[in-house]
Length: 209
Image (tube, rainbow, N blue to C red):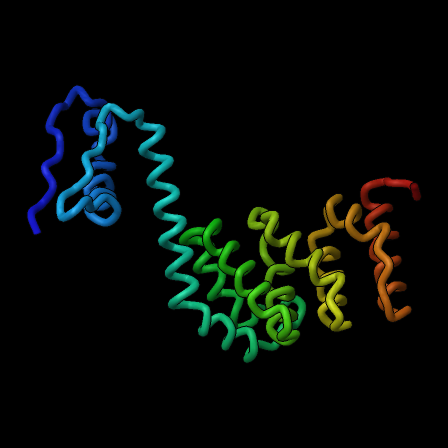
């Protein structure tokens, strides 16, 4: 197949000021703009910001697809094989942190996908909850809160407990706001929630509403 002919006008702005994007634009045209055997032309007068935006979306989507199709079985296997002990890294921790270093946004979306795809498999849910509860604070995304929040209403008691433990480990105001009005069973789990809430109120000097 013939290669696309790219504009050579150096006054376009894109090639002149961010030449490192030229290779990406070539790939973008080749993989996403075929039009009846030819290539859809790209307006090189598009602002650099727009090109970068396209680049980020492309990277995130491609990385997420790779994680879903190539790494999900390995993640689940590691979760099921891991012994999650507090203060000790499990088999799954370095594996996921490596993916986070590559693309944390796509990786968190992937973990979110794995959790909800296995909502009827407590062993996997517990592993995911223990995993995200140990992530460094700068990796906390809305997906983590959604996963742990969903766990609080799960029918499995251990899944619910791991959801509470995740919020306890994060120990932020979001944790307090989520747990302070939570009602769960059995009674021992409610007692645990109350202790966590009491500790967070002391940390943040928040009185009982």
